[in-house]
Length: 578
Ligand code: C2E
Ligand code: MG
Ligand code: MG
Image 1 (spheres, helix red, strand yellow):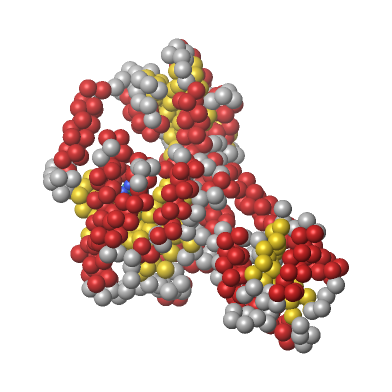
Image 2: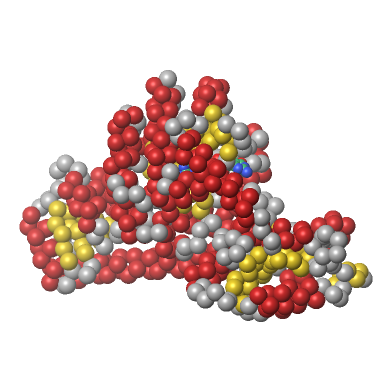
């Protein structure tokens, strides 16, 4: 039912309006002063607001200004009432963002007409907005899942299809296999023929592979000279047969203008469940098997033969050491500055955990966080990270540096632990850090484990004043419109798009689409992994809000970060300053 809010101090007029609108089938709300009107608008989110201009206390203009501050109330159609036929009143109201006005006294017909026109216009706007969102989404779906040169599915789509297959696998006789197909001369050829001819050759290769793999299987190019083929459930003999079929595809030459080019293909094979259970491991093992084909006397295709014993011992050792690392205080936090592109100032930092392993030196979180997740150690480790980061930022604030915001990453288990919000609040209280100085970074996969619970937790955290950002955006699998349900403040564009910006028009298109979408959702955008002035200039041109990356600074130890702050280094604001 359409909900209309009437803000009018004169009781007779207000009651009259409310009665009339109810009789027309609208749900109605009344406020007898401006402040209460704003409160009702924020809480009830009506579909339309009718508001008197002249009121004691907060007047109609004041109401309008207050409503403009909030993304949701700002878009509610606003009709104001004026007794003054003087058009300066009207002009002022419209300038502040009102949609229409009624001059008192007005007839019922005038009132209903004005309301209907506004509601229809609003509906059109909403439809157009949804359409735009859908279009951006469709474009992104394509850009995110396919390679534009070869039209082959990309790594993300490969991962999705792999996940789907794994979920459906039940029988043991049918196997999922990963084939790594390498073309030895292709990098060299690319060099001698030039990139344009190299591209044509790649397209021809892709076509040949596609014509042979069959529709239930997936071909992806994972690097310049390596293709990966995902074989849906087949028998072991069938896998070998497929490998031969694919090798056959290279038994006759490619014609490129006047050139005849013969490529040599080699294939390595890894089987799900035997040679690994996750895609990366399987690809790694398939590539290792492909290396084996280079040994004298070997077939041009090889199954992976694992050195399982040695590997699992190593993993067990690392797991044990990880357990002790917390007690032994082997973890450290590094801080990577985030800079505002408008002001050039450091706004905050992302806290990134490091493990100073007694023998191995610095171990990357990409290696030990998954292990910590698996073993449950992530809970105490995550708590330590959060406390250490809050404490550190508080120290910098007390040392007199401008207010900094610290971003802390939360992984799946951590975010989904019961009582996360109270724990975060407890840490903020203990360390004395203002909640508005804390930002929590989450990835799509973390939220998708239990979306309803995630939404509730996010609202709770946000109600404290904590900022929420979605990390590595673009690498997940969920749809854009689905994501809009989650109350984020910030969207971080994944490094994989940023690193190819400028050179690769596909990533440029994705980044532009993400920025447009984020703007329409009123999200701040942070680009991760900015490494070159070209990328920076592009992002500045696209009104990206913040950047983070080696170009400005790598992650720094707490001491170095403090020195860095002391130098007052800021970002050059325009191309000419670069
Ligand atoms: P992330 O949250 O996306 O963090 C950004 C990563 O990009 C960091 O890697 C950072 O060092 C790296 N990076 C920043 N600028 C550049 C650049 O210009 N070029 C390149 N090539 N890389 C850049 P790092 O520190 O290895 O962390 C990897 C991931 O580990 C993080 O990705 C985050 O997901 C996770 N992680 C790190 N610390 C924590 C933590 O305390 N808790 C949890 N749960 N996860 C963490
Ligand atoms: Mg992060
Ligand atoms: Mg990230």
